[in-house]
Image (tube, rainbow, N blue to C red):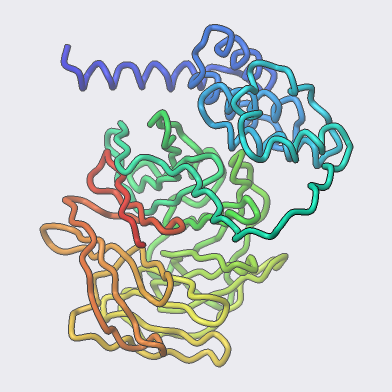
Length: 408
């Protein structure tokens, strides 16, 4: 048996075993048993299953997950989870537990320990002020992450820094997958059928500040097309709310979703070339403006006052304050971009060509309406999705590989 078949067999067996737990208590029990056997990655995945099948705020599941995170080499995640427990007024006894040794080695442990003990940290003695050191960079996933998900047709990618996982959209099976950046395991996150969404999943955006995932689903074609944007709890995949375009908007097909730092959700309609918005707490979306573009494909938020839209005609810069748009002028064709993102005065995205794909950075002038430079960051055989994460851009270089390029 070849190595590829062996690997597929192992992953398939793992998926079956991790999905076998019936409910949250069963998942917690199996996670604890896996940890006792030293199977820490399986313990971690089963602990996540417990959260998904139960409640993201269940203290017992949270503690099981924190333990599995610590044992599987994710102490920073465990520190965050224990901090959430402390914020709920709970005080898990982890100060001497060997399973949390890695957590206690972290610089943030003394502060957490003080919170768990219910006592403030002692003030440090006065000393001459020294130059402030730069904070340590968070542990990043590998530059190349290989995984097995046969038959996947990717349409979008997102990165969750807290859990060190990627969310991957699969157009073929109308589902979202989770790819673990540490173990490279792949599990089903949510499907259109199981979640009660419309037939097809077309876009999603991660709101890491609030722990939400906004997913667009669509049914019908042409004049019969309708779309809805669902709000999911990121940690569990549980549906929290949904927003729709008003009935008077007519047929709608959302192909891209973006979230601002303030939690405002934008959706791009490909049928009418329109931009819609849902403000925090809104029950329905509002139409913002009609766009002079053909086949819009992607949104990129640029601060709280501007946005960029990629389309077959090029890229538009939208001034949200006055609801006007201007085309980005460039000596190069900008009509093949997807998965567009904005960072520090530049646009980064996947440029899809007939026989290849490229990750390209477009430098912009101060107005954001003229390209001043172009840099090809990477080439790929099948990059259909990409995502910005801090100083990194992650993209699918082929059907089973996520790669990272640094934007520094």
